[in-house]
Image 1 (cartoon, rainbow, N blue to C red):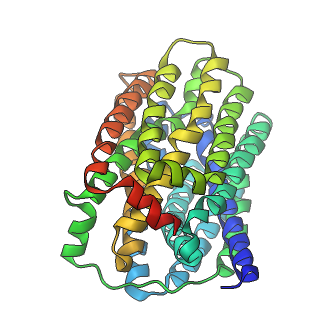
Image 2: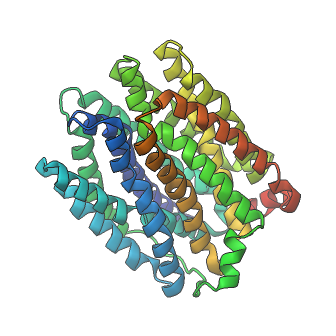
Image 3: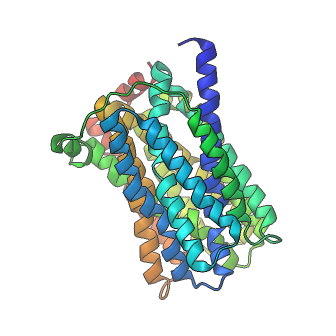
Length: 392
């Protein structure tokens, strides 16, 4: 592949991540406030938000498997992007609550498959330059932060700002998805033996368990932090600054991806992310000034960014090549599907009896558990060997 072609591919993939992850930043952080302003109580809000991890759990693995089975993931990506844009357009009509829930469910179902498929495509397209994945993915983090800042600036004057900005980004995503580069991917139907390799008692099984714990802990922040800060009386700008601060460090982590992978290896990054999450969530739960609670969220750049870099690199070297799409989809389903779904379904029941503050304490405990399990990954999968394979 020529340098010009590689540069063009990286640009298109970076633009795709900007629009796709930007749509997450526009919708998820402040959607709880938008729903609360419609008169919904916290447990009902949590129940509606559970649509998004449910979409990752159901659609992500299914479409990842279809990409493996057909070797034509671009067809599935284009269809999913179009479906997400159609339901996104419904958000601009200022729909009734039932129609709003239906539109959010449609977005959850169609947008979810895009991420594991494009992650797999990015790794495949970069070929021997897989260490550059972080430098492509970081533009998604930049866009997430930009979308959060934009929506946070508008929401006090325009209550449906999360919905309107999301609709615009999803419309642009359709056009970019049609122009994504392609790469040959070895694929076949997954056998029971293959699936046991991914979810059994081996190193990939432990990674998926860590991803579930990670997903539960971080969903508390992603979906409920704005409600938490609002309940504490914090101004909107502090909540916005918290999200943007974490994304700023995440961008730096992604930019340093090759160096971090060389020095720490995938396992080291996963452990670092888990241990950094413990003090972060504990401070969030303490009765401290809201400005300090907002400031500590800068650690999101490590607790999320380092985890995702390490986990994607681990899958790239641990999963059989013919099942890499399926393995990446399983990782996404665990982190963005199973974990958040458990948190939000649990919150929809328990928020009648407990506070969001107590959920952040539980998040810190789960982060410590994930760090403990991550220590066992080195027993069967050497971090230095991981680094050598990913950097080659």
